[in-house]
Length: 347
Image (cartoon, rainbow, N blue to C red; front, side, top):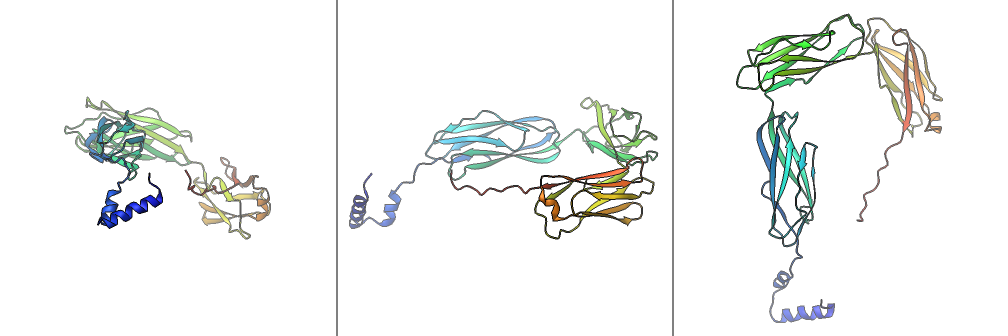
């Protein structure tokens, strides 16, 4: 490599000989670099039956003049598995990036991505896409029937699940069978052979408890001989409290605004509240009725005295007149904001 005085002398001699400055710059070659190129950036699988496992290969070419190094390929979800691919592609070389895609439980049009990381100075992070329109021969909406059981268990409740036949041939369903005696189901054919409604009913009276069950229907389809509908019944308490746990910032203002806790009475009985307490120093608790007999607000006024020991937790306690839920307990604790570190400029 010539030193600085020699380089100046060289450039001066070129100018004297009539070489244009633009020509001088053109003669300074750019450093060699790789250039990644894929034959396609998006692959469309088209209409695919949900649950099918598809395979595909992306073809890449190194259009640069230096070795292309593939540092890694990161799929956006666990449904995509990438097979082995070369870590180095020479200039002008080609390589295959193979993958396997599991479409289990996918419905409708979906797009998944893969992040290809390389030493290409222009496209170090390149995104590839996988697209598909996924369907099932027999669709169930929703997949899980969710029911909320109020405290008074003598009331019959119902929910409906739609069964759609996407096949070209009509579908026949047998009467539904429940796995538990607390639930019953009946079948209504909305569109002959194509759309059905499964109406799920609670069978009172029964214990006020959560239930997990299934509704089974036999079909005449060799492809899907049985249909399973999951059912979850959640027994609601007589009183619902929002939030159930309070988190306060460590730096409370000098005069903090009161905090509001909502209480809703789901029972058919009236409710009374007494002995409203909070063991945090300097705090005050009161209750007000926003909807007669049904909705209430617990108004809590905190003080900065409680911040003297930010590691300590406190408790709000309210006694009620309901035998099934005689007391409401709400924990209170401090949380510190997450520390955000500055971005490093170094390697």
